Image (cartoon, rainbow, N blue to C red):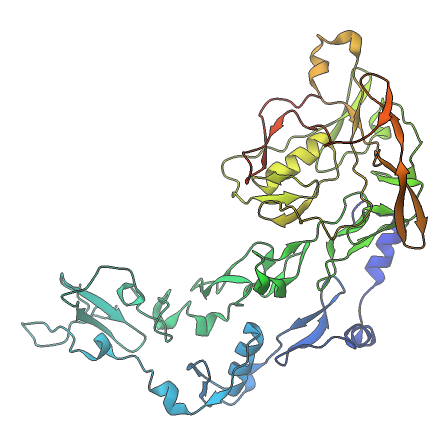
Length: 467
């Protein structure tokens, strides 16, 4: 989806409908493993997908190297593609030797009155298993089995209502192996479990992962294969709100689509070295702006609405983070750790700062080692009325988005790179004296506090944010 783009940009995106030639050109240098197919996704970026039509395949069971039976060779290849693991054909007797037997081969319990084996399934002769036994249920049988005398009570698939899946380790989620891995096909990287919902067939996806089988990244995320390297889920694109055209990014590199005059992996750097990125694009660093008096002069981001109060236009946020919000610690593009994406968005809205989710989990020291350089942090300037310090308005945040360049250096650009030339003297904002900037930056947000070292999670108070 385009964000604040021009009508021309929108027409370009709407007319960019891929055809066969465009797809072939985009996929010509893409190699997909395990017989996956390269295609253009909804974002017009190439991606590898598992496209197998096994419905027309001959139903001839095969045994694979994971010692599982598959209804056809096509089904085995599809599983290998989804798991991105090699599966080879093995002799049928290897898998058939893994056949599950009632009560692990022991004799099932019987009804003393009839001599019939106790059936704990869902049929007309169903009976509850007596104390000291458990129900061993599969698609073929449901029998009450005696627990071992040295049996230690623990939950296993044998104790579940629908028994074990064909793999012998996962509990079936419904009758006839419903919700079992062989029927779900959950992506091993993108899902938490091999089982799925027995009715909807929806697998339980990791953060940023979508699809019924958890086999693709959601919009605004990238890097599904990187989960195997230790990532918790797909990686947030982290595109600059001010510098990018859209929320999503290239699926294999995470590169964002930048506005004209903006560059960098996350679209955070202006092409022209004497400009800095702000809400209205790249503007000259020496441009001064008066406080806005009407909403026509002010653009609000992150869901905020503009209101006019006492001759000034301000952005007001209505987002509230409740206990119902799923806790998920995230790292923001400002280098701070937040206890949830909602808290990050709430702070970005209140301060109208270009802060987006950069990664799941707490920020690390080397988290930003590969970001665009030089990065210029932007601080919203606030306009208050010093003669009305007791006014209720003095407790509200009234500000304009004016980008602030790194005060320690000025830059010289050569081609696509920039380097700091020398520290510059800047006036002290409190005393008016001139000195060399250095040392750690001051804390920006008095309404937020960090946890002890190791957590560094930024929390916000429920009161209004005042500067």
